Length: 356
Image 1 (cartoon, helix red, strand yellow):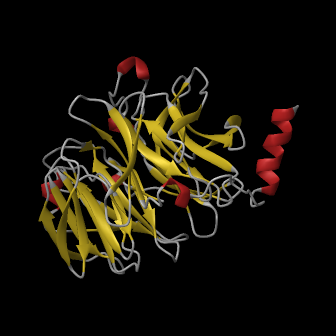
Image 2 (image 1 turned 180 degrees about the vertical axis):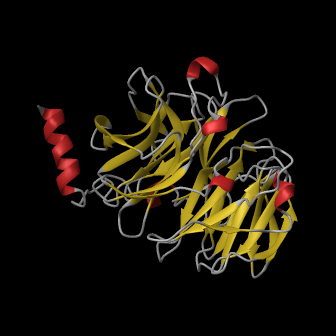
């Protein structure tokens, strides 16, 4: 009965206020979170401040992928890399584990989650691997109990982000997997990715699929600008001889717009992370497998150059600029150029950089 009541509460009253016990300022005012491994292969969630200096690092059970930062209180949820099952809730000021997300036995995480705007609920991308369906877990952040799950709108939901209107966008990569087969991709000849939009209370509102020629261009990582336009980082699963775009743009009600770049081949068919600049003027797409970064015009999608960067991984806003995690530190996109910031050289960053 209690679960049913909490489920109805999520579906009907999302948006109610939530007061947290500790603000991010009490955790050292971090601006960015990233999963990383050290030289001994120990996994950490690392926080960086406005100057890209390390604020704290907290241990993770195994290799992490991305994290979700609570919008009001100093908590972060770090997720395992697919097909991992851990979701660790971290009390950042105290430097301790607060809770773990208790997944059903027939699920694993895809490495991403997003909070509702009020911080009351957390949505997580999951694989119902026995049914071959994408699902979204719903967790009450009062105690991180699981209260519901929702359809993601497709197969292989990877990243979920909250939109300016309080709704959500879900990147359904279209790739069927099962933990019995590790990270193997089981349906590449028939895969169908899509971008799905959910209302603030979890209802599926819109779904857009790629045209047939781009059906094997997996929709994996996404970002949104202040106007609600979504930028998509793509990972090609078809013939390695074919050259296809690494970026697509979408506005609700329209079709996917694919953006070409002369240096796309340098990403080796694998766009890792994506971010609009805070002013919306640029989009950066990382290529960790190709040690390269693509720069696009944020308004038109036109190519604006690129840069060779070793292990170019996560990208996210840092103040008025953009920060990129690379081997040995960070690179800042500033004033049309790049500057390097040294950091802990013993860390190998995972694919994502999460703004706080």
